[in-house]
Image 1 (tube, rainbow, N blue to C red):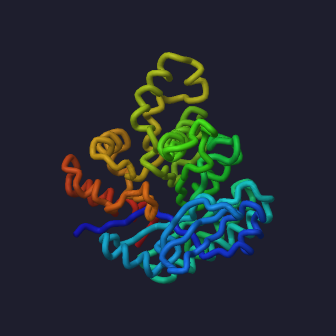
Image 2 (image 1 turned 60 degrees about the vertical axis):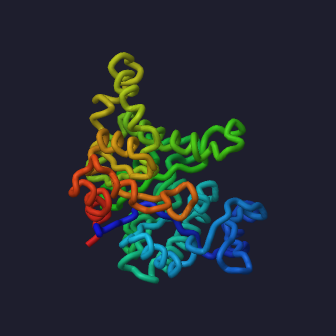
Image 3 (image 1 turned 45 degrees about the horizontal axis):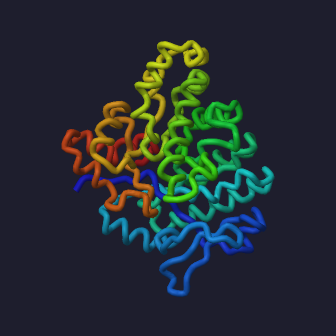
Length: 333
């Protein structure tokens, strides 16, 4: 069996409501575990946020499922409700350090197979850079950030400067959508996850390209976008066409948008062979890494099966997407 490295998975520590109140007494995230110990709810203060099961917080249960799925290594990161971006910077910095220590404790169940990404207090540049560097030194293989900070997208100088820090210090970055657009227009049928979440992802990518931010960020940056980059691969032709014919599109972007696909990677969580074929055609197989969004229901239920079954990929291309690209991107020995 080929090696499988899942670069997009989530965890949530066994936080109490009292611990969550340190971040925010009304909305702080914590875990309410059912009496059977198998299921629970992520809570936001007194409100239920998401039903979850044991593998989200129990590393040994996680490892058992990895064995069942044939996953050799999994790179796990915070569930985005844990980010704490709206908290005062010092509170958020203390919270991030505490959550990152929890993440390392989770990985300690089997450090060779469980790897973790850190979170940072992104609202304060100095504190975010300091925590990213501390986390790398303490054993994290990179950082996870949200794709925006309030109304500031990834082209904002504050966020660009954070990415420059990561580039200069060899800190891999996973950009994950969160706090989705749409408001009341996304009120049911999981539309925030089905429509707004992919849109947030491609917005992050296009904000970096069209703003010219990639001209200011060292090429050494290791940046990956979750969820296959949203609909980026599908709309790239539209973006190139706009750049060719409208000066307002190219005013800050000196090169055609499709020329920037070598500046970032994406995961493979697109769930459909034709979508994967388009994604690898646009991005190149060397910039796609297997990611499942485990253990959530909208993630890939048979981890890596989409890639393993992709007959349009060569054996070596499948092996790169399933593991080789991740080993190089995250510096896994």
